[in-house]
Image 1 (cartoon, rainbow, N blue to C red):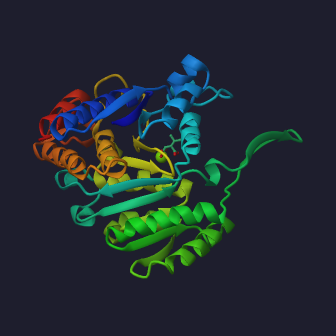
Image 2 (cartoon, helix red, strand yellow; image 1 turned 135 degrees about the vertical axis):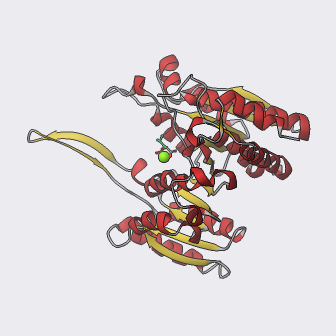
Image 3 (cartoon, protein in one colour; image 1 turned 30 degrees about the horizontal axis):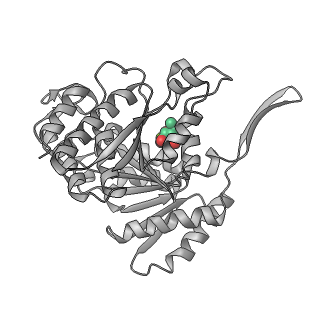
Length: 353
Ligand code: IPM
Ligand code: MG
């Protein structure tokens, strides 16, 4: 029996996890996957109910489960200056579970190619994986704000040690070995010391993977090449903040951030979540695209539970639904049928056979 912790969080997180769980329930019927779910608090809702964005009871819950499914956190309600932010809960759970590798697969969905803002021939064949470092860098370095001589200043520091880089890079090389055997390591080694260390460790690790071709790319150049020649990329490995920025940018190659799932892995239970946020502007209106979360469940079945057929069945169901022309608002064109969050969930679970 697999134990899942469900952390819906805030905004559309609640709606999209609900649909993902319905899909999982269908997978249970068809593939006989046995699991149990316990729900926990994270983000703004957790602040409201406990005062903390990642309360002790959620810590206890996720420590004893096999995998975590998370919706999204954040919203204007918790953005007041000086108060604790829901996003802190997300950073804390990543650190607490040592989820140092974040995998974001981006592909050009055949039936969404016209929704992409790029020319069809540019995005055709795009199939890349961003491997983002998730527990280091500017997100976790020393920081502060102070007033000195009547001038307010703030600082955040990027810090990495060789162990943090090496363990992440190994995962990226292993994953590249299962794909097209090409790695692009993204850094800013022309300016940053952390990037120079990054590049050195990547070079060292590469000697153990002779079958994989490696190139280095500066992050500014990479941002440009994601637009000009995205099909060149197989695995992109990069540090935390570069990965955050590049993955939102690259998600548009696959039509919408609403299509981008993610898996965060470390030593213990892994965490699966859509790469998008809580979208407070459309929360509670049945407008959100649940497919990124549904596809995150497919990643969970594949990575945590090695249930490859069940994972494939979900991805295939998504493809069929898109082929039939069903679209949530973020991926809709006038020739398609616009559906809400629930109807999209219904459509996907009907196709799981
Ligand atoms: C992401 C998000 C988070 C991040 C935010 C919500 C803290 O943008 O998962 O990409 O910056 O890591
Ligand atoms: Mg982000």
